[in-house]
Amino acid sequence: MKALPGRTDHVVVVGAGFAGLSAALHLLGAGRQVTVVERDEQPGGRAGRSERLGYRMDTGPTVLTMPDLLDEAFAAVGGRLRDHVDLIALHPAYRAAFADGSSVDVHTDPEAMETEVARFAGPREAEGYRRLRRWLTDLYGLQMRRFIDANFDSPVQLLHPDLVRLAAAGGFGRLDRAIGRFLEDERLQRVFSFQSLYAGVPPSRALAAYAVIAYMDTIAGVYFPRGGMHAVPVAMAQVAAAAGATFRFGAAVQRLERRGDRIAAVVTQHERIPCDAVVLTPDLPTSYELLGRRPRRPVRLRHSPSAVVLHAGTTRTWPQLAHHTISFGSAWSGTFHELTRTGRLMSDPSLLITRPTATDPSLAPDGRHLHYILAPCPNTEVGPDAVRWGELGGRYRDALIVELERRGLCGLGESIEAECLVTPADWSGMGHAAGTPFSAAHTFGQTGPFRPRNLVRGTENVVLAGCGTTPGVGVPTVLISGKLAALRVTGRIAGGGHRARNARAGVVAGTGGGGRGGAA
Image (cartoon, rainbow, N blue to C red):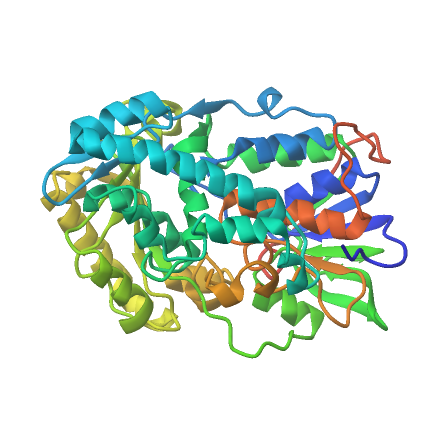
């Protein structure tokens, strides 16, 4: 693995989201001096927080899996995740509701899930689930350390016996066909394949290897941190500060000061911060703009679909909703064609409804409830542009409420007393390419060693992290990206011991805000 040449004693991390905070903790554990620069007034990046009328709304990801990756970051400075974050395992992990009125609870416990599948679709499908579970577990074992948690310097590194094993396991077939080998019930096939949409590829075109996301959701378990998802980056920042990191909040990066092939300083609107190395976590276009150069690729990057998210504080809730409920429409393959090809809004949407107050009532005033409705939509490259979304947003919000009331959430519209609507126009305003928070799609040509590298040609001491680079989209992989960036800087990862040079916390809040120093 190629590491940065020259001195790397003081590292500036741009962005205090999951990627930046993961990088900071691993760098601190390896003895580096770390300064984290963040454009917002608080840590979190996309995992932010909006407070309205007593409702505490998470504005970013709502599904947390693979908490061992978080524990690894805390352990780099001698900490433990459980000492700082109260994680609650969700049972069920999801509830899947279908257009025919049926529903199935997705359990991570094998016996509970077998029983549920047998109830839902019969004993033959339960036996198929047992075989699917074994396959998903084997798939994860083949991929994690070799192909996901790894820095690639060349596609040649793929040539390993594990690649042959992955091919033999069917990892290079199509995801929908692979799931269909185990489950005949079309509804259950959806439960174990819809995750590919968040990687930007329909199940009919996604590699079967991406079933590893279903492993994370349906086998490794889904968790919720007490206090909301935003509680996790807050805890990470606190632990990093205690380990010696200095934080500059409200500090937008205006430029990188270059000397030859090295960055000598990061310049914000407040100060010039000299450095030996830089970890950049903003979305790729922003990072490349700061660097003043863009890598040459044979074809243009293709981006994932986007999402409209309605955060709603309500006076009531509905008993059929679990913490996470996937409400599937009747349409399936046609939906993906709309999202990725024609650029149309889903005519029969499948929606993710998250009710965090089912697990933590303190996120809303007494007797009130929070609901997040996520509707996948085309990104601004194939669908309506940001300007058009300024006109569409309110109408689409109303259409979603009508559809959800038709699906059984009667009185939803009139129960809303606080809300926040996020559309591709908002994602574009945050600096996300193609108006999507899900970055570059995980097509074959944008996966593994073919994904934008975390090293940038022509700049010796900069590493990229976040969902646009290795290994990709999602909270677990973004945490890994921070660790891989730290490994590029240090050549190793320190484990379990606090080796930071500064023993005192160094949180320094700047003034102002906005600009480009945001996080992934």
